[in-house]
Image (cartoon, each protein chain N blue to C red):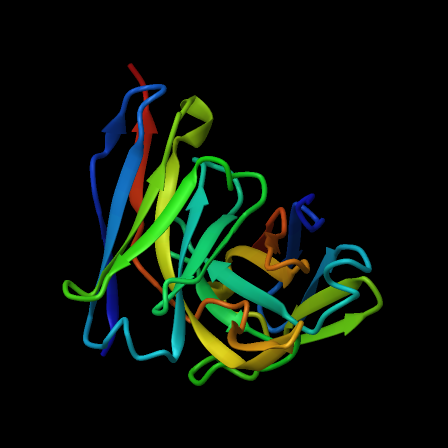
Length: 133
Length: 110
């Protein structure tokens, strides 16, 4: 049974970089069957998609966060990571990692790729990150 | 990209049905069949209830159903049970490799 587990500092100072890791157990992050994602939820508020990474290294980011976000993966450790730079109090949230099953092959502009299904069938428990001095 | 619009709350008595709407635009909900619904109990991670507008993952009761008309998607919970009391979020592909969530709706079982 595949499980996801977020880890990282629970407190980050303003203007610094938030860094979290999601460890995947019970399955391989390199299988090619899934995209791996980060989603966050400020206390008492709704969900916000941060971005995706595929085992090939391809990434998709929320345009509103793109300038500050980097998602990477470490296949040797079966982990993927999130870095969010220049954080402010508005970045205080529960951060979830999640899995999205590949929906099939899409072709555009002469190139083809495996596309996300744009839904999340497995989530980690989440980790609260507070931005405060 | 703005969040999809959901009513803040909905309620029903045990055994009744409740429907939650999720309104977007032709650039998201209306333009693609990639609408999903999630159930979230307090302090817990969201759980996938519906994907691709109307498909149910294995293990989700058939009391949960999804549909879409134009720019509005809907989640219906039939035969309401106490454990259905939770927050519900919709999401939709919004084009250009972007995903948007709804504002969330709290379902109360009276």
